[in-house]
Amino acid sequence: MNTDPAPVEFDLHTTAAPESVRSALLDFSPRRPELWPAIEPSLYEVYSVGATSAEIREGSKGPGGRVWAREEYDFSDPHTVRWTVRESNFSEPGSYVSATISPEGAGSIVHIAWNRVGSGFMGRLICAMVRRSGGRPVAQSFGRGLSVLEASADGRTTASARRRAR
Image 1 (cartoon, rainbow, N blue to C red):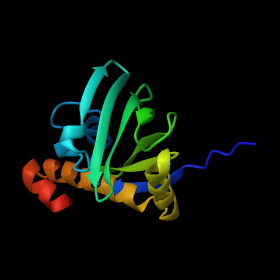
Image 2 (image 1 turned 45 degrees about the vertical axis):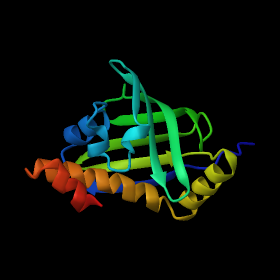
Image 3 (image 1 turned 90 degrees about the horizontal axis):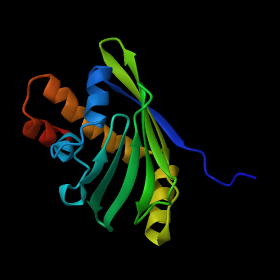
Image 4 (image 1 turned 45 degrees about the horizontal axis):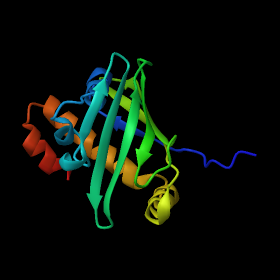
């Protein structure tokens, strides 16, 4: 019997083109925390980037402290980016998030599948909250990043886009 929880899944709609969304998801430059405002710069580290994979540490600060995960990004599929936990202070190894990007008019639909299994008390609490809310905190986090991307495409500066996304 499989006891792993089902992924929390939802769609986000954006005016950004699919190529722009994929490019932002795969931007492992020092600029990444600007593109994705939930990433705390002090918790961001790049270990390796290859043709279809990368190993990255990312994290966030919140009221309960810092959470981070060292993850293996797989972008061998041209439409899906999947990042799987190798090590984390809140999530079990093998937990993952994936983003599948499809065109929608001039923009995109980004289908998120969030399947984290918490480790430790705080991790279990965080994961339970995300599941009970239907993924609302995860959707809001991705939404802020997509807002930055949309604003950049509109010609506004990244800094002003970050303020708008918060």
